[in-house]
Length: 188
Picture 1: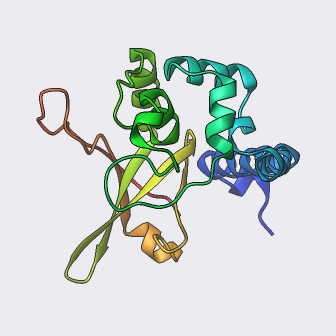
Picture 2 (picture 1 turned 30 degrees about the horizontal axis):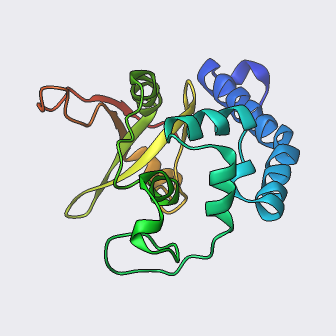
């Protein structure tokens, strides 16, 4: 048995983060299940908050009645460009085509969306694992200040994790030059 005086602060913080992440996941179970029921029962237009849906439709220069009409139409997969809706090309404009797949129209987004993406991307890192003959790269993301999440096939054992590093800023900057990566060893 481990007593409190033999557990390091890093281990204590790590365990606390794991417990908080597990509680958040458990607390949101009902919300996730309700979202799934809404998707199954009402469709993708109702998966998000109605106010956010209305704002999205406004950016597409459309409204709820048009979106509902497009949602109810059956589509036929195509291999060529154009709509998959069963309509003659002259029967719809870019508003319908934009609702269907957001192509063929100006779909500009505000810079706040880009700034939000930049901030979210900061938590994503490239996992570099030394393997015989080189290095294997995968991805992971931070879910708490010192808690990394990745798929089980990326780091299958504590030994693999002990040989891995997480690298952040593994992309080009605005000038197309690589950024300087920030690298951390993992503590399995």
